[in-house]
Length: 98
Image (cartoon, rainbow, N blue to C red; front, side, top):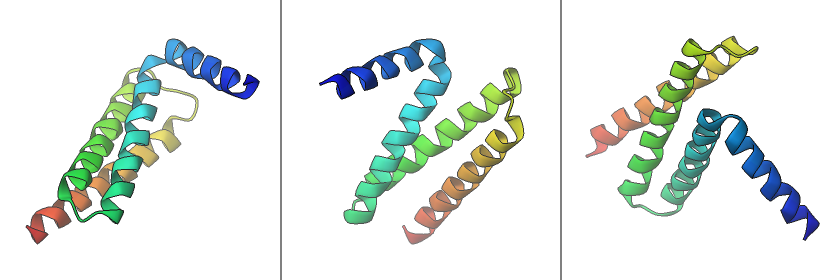
């Protein structure tokens, strides 16, 4: 029980300390779940939802880093750009197969 109490307190504290980063983390977590479901199921809506969540989180990260840079700005921007290019490539591939 103490383990869950610790994680719940960490969860609440992180959501209050830096809300934009928390929302981005939540979006990427849901995107991973949706893309995982899309690999197991042939349904396209899971793939589209997962890719659009990755695009949204990537753009949000890039905007947040442009407004208020963090100490590791370059690596964060590079990671967000890589995620954005991969998800846009996934959308292009999805449009080609339709």
